[in-house]
Length: 547
Ligand SMILES: Cc1cc2nc3c(=O)[nH]c(=O)nc-3n(C[C@H](O)[C@H](O)[C@H](O)COP(=O)(O)OP(=O)(O)OC[C@H]3O[C@@H](n4cnc5c(N)ncnc54)[C@H](O)[C@@H]3O)c2cc1C
Image (tube, rainbow, N blue to C red):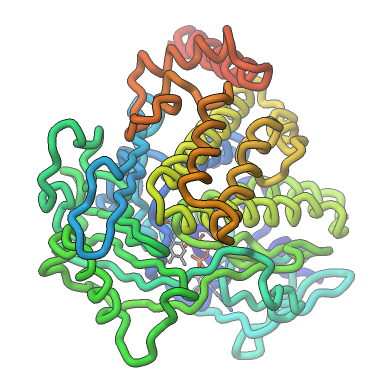
């Protein structure tokens, strides 16, 4: 006898989205959480890949509420006025004791025509999604801490701290880092195979100044979007700060700013004789412009100071169970990949669970792809983050990595948006299933070998530079030569100009990019652009007919 079809441990963003999707599509879902909403969660910065996936999930599984998270206007209107606006993803390099060099900053501005992104105030987004799941029929138990789980051939049993036993047909552990299921099945890799090393200190603060107000930036070096209206990273050798404001647009009623410091813990071991706050401000004081930004800033909640953050699992699915992305592994907040990876895993998992419920087939093979995807997402993020931390010592090397991230991410998001538009027109789920057929599972542009070649070169070159087998300038030269020679980085978006610091395409630049892609792009680029354009036009025509 089963009490429920699917039991989800954790009602965070993962539990809320997955619970909504499964309940909306007819499954009997139970969501358990040891805590109560609203509760603090970190993970506030969004990236285009996530925004595209949220739209895709929303149409594919018919849960329109999910897409409210991808636009600051719907975040504000539907969820509340506590979220920040995100007009860019920006980085400024700093050296100890020195004023920043304005030439050593880069920014990927987010074109308004494509996205109007937000900084997610997670206690509100997570509570909202949890309620959406309950509205679609999920059963909720808050204040229910899971102490143990048992998996057998006929189902799963979840045991609460009071000894209460609940029985389901399938189990998803979306409990995050301290996963009961990972512990129970001994899934944690000890030690983890990932390359990157970092630890973090973070909190929410009040009275953090706008960076734009504490630096006297010459006109020609002013970024396209004000620093305070996006996700700001202050970067230095083997470390970086994040500043993610929620108070940065006129409709916000939230005074808080998410701040954090991430450090390579091999270079900066965690001190045992200082508080997190003391350590944070010691680092702040090293960089004059950062010190001015944080002058008078105060924490609005207790600090969190982690040990090494990286962890991974030998596998993340089995017969009748799945470890959700954050329960399976984590790399680093640098590229804001946490929620993006989470929704990618949800997309791959949800239709499989729904089919398994219908056929009563929960064999391991059915979910194998989800495990492969989770591992791929983790490992490509590890590549990127590890290369980034290596490169922070040399602006040109860092700039090359920023560009490689930028255009691989642009093409990856196009691929997802094309699928979403095509699905919207055809309602054929095969459109999404075909996305899974690409060779490099977990890579953001998984079906273009040239992109993978450049990526692998990036990894190899950075590792050589780190090992002392080549100089950092030489490493930067190799990657910039590659960017100049390859036909993948779109010139119209600014990737080909070595002196360009800002990726900030206008509507005209985007049109030029599409035209170039269709006329001159290699086959994958041509297909992406023409498919996207065709689907957009057809959708536009259909909308006009309806009106
Ligand atoms: C320092 C830091 C910064 C980050 N920044 C970003 C970012 O900017 N952008 C981004 O995309 N991602 C970021 N991430 C990653 C992001 O935080 C996660 O991907 C995301 O929060 C995962 O959501 P989740 O719902 O899976 O887990 P969580 O949000 O951790 O939710 C887990 C839930 O499970 C419950 N739970 C746990 N154990 C039990 C149990 N035994 N019984 C019952 N309930 C239980 C908890 O109470 C909690 O409510 C960051 C991560 C860190 C560590």
